[in-house]
Image (cartoon, rainbow, N blue to C red; front, side, top):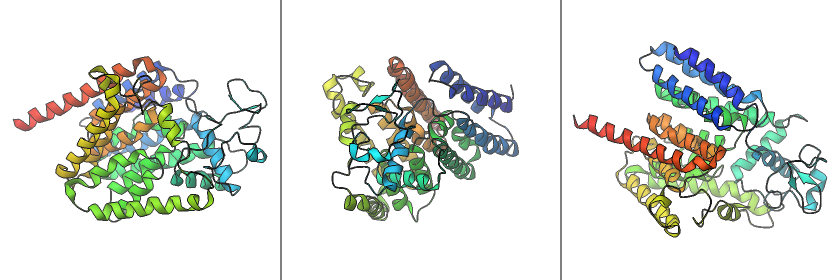
Length: 412
């Protein structure tokens, strides 16, 4: 079967995937077609690949626009945070349920019919998840929400966020295609991009764009990485790769710290409370502080007592980061960034598939397809939590097998 035909089938499956509530079967079919496209594309001439990667990638990403967000309600919070800021109020000061913000409520975010909605303490309901706690999103993300609010016409609802996700996904695609066309297919055809970056419009896409731009340059790398962390905290795992070989440490860390500080400063001056928002509560809610339950530390808990898992995860991640800083290739910072970021996923086993957009981008930069399994594992963990341990185990085995195969080929 031709690659083009597989991509057409993939586009149709992606439209079906986002058309309703998340279903594991649709996800698995999409990923199987993605793997088939990567396999069949081997040896295609460059001109053909350019059309399939760039043109096909844009079309696949656009399938995310075919339906409202299908498997996440986070975008409601994005819209709300933008509206609150436009009213001159810090989103870190008041939760959506606070009566102080009642004048900002509308029938879309706070419907009169409360079926399958989040209840408010004083009565009524909202589509915004965790309505009794302030926002968790860092300041660069907040700036993005405010910008979209300012640019969006009345009644646009989720479409502005989805279009923003599409534009950023295409920007990353173009940067990756300019570096290595064949490796860019790992991003262009990956189902996680249209589903999570575009359809669900996750702000993680903004952080991924900033990371890709940071690792593609040297002059503004520190500032861009700082901005990425201030968009979504996960990109902190990219820093060891940027510091690989112990070179340019101050040139990266100082601008990064300045960028983070400057973006937080306006909220610190305006906010009457903590600018950490719901972050401490989220860590507890997701059971990152303890492994007695939930889906965290799944692989470590196969071989260690539950109580040891959080400490082992932190220690092993720190060792991986130190190893990359000391021995990593400074000319290929994306390799070290992928190792540390991928290790984070294997050790902490997060249950949200959109987090892995960063892994997909780094895998495309490093030409390491085997790490893509972490994005699939995250999707399985989110859609069918009972399969999370198996999916993360298979992802780890794929990474180890590919590494062993490369070592054997290098030894010949």
